[in-house]
Length: 311
Image 1 (cartoon, one colour):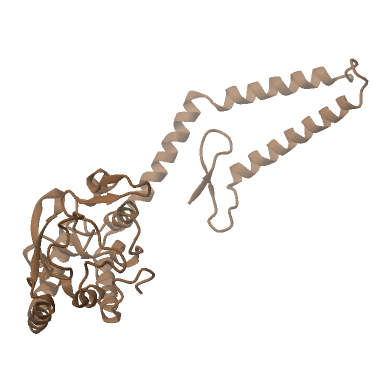
Image 2 (image 1 turned 45 degrees about the vertical axis):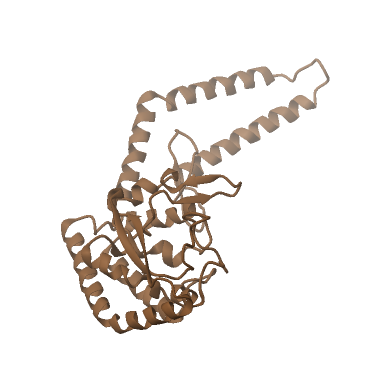
């Protein structure tokens, strides 16, 4: 929905795609054109007269125009009409917000989401048990380092919890650089780690966090407390200071979500937060199911680390 601002201080809608003005704006545009044409005729008549001798009736027409304009403004922009127009606009915005499918904010929706998380994570833990053993062997054989690594993440409302992941980087990968997101061709990532990250197999231990209720299958990515990001001008910024952080923290973090699937891999967290806020405001049970199915497809294709479209 787009808006114009013709007349009366009230925004008027533009038809999507065609950008046609609403009837009130069309009428206002016609009146403005007539007034413009009248001023043009007035100016052309005045330009045809000798210098110092204004055409007859010019002063009178200017006064009429001025009086009519002042009267129109006084009649239109009264406190009553402005307040009424503002209230009408606010009512329209509230109705638009109420139409969003926030079906997971109710008790039944939350119970359905939790039931889906428990069922899928339980089945996933049992079905992936042989894969855990295979991954542990190849990780240990590559560099002899630990199989898992442990991190603290921020959960719902900022409550911290511990997660374990299959180690995909060299031991002590953050000893010198701190908690910074991996980049394309990051030298800290091991050979086995590249395969695991492309298929999201390094995230398998987080199924236990989902089963316990620390996380959900779908939601914003679980961030690390104190995680930082380097801006375009080299400015270091805490993610807690990025707009949208507080709102995205009101829901459980997820293993997958809109940002994880659709956002380009290397864009800043500031932009990824916009995808997260879209999920928070439009979350529904069927949206979760769709995101989970798309995540399985991306895992099957091995495109989680792709810098372009993952789908």
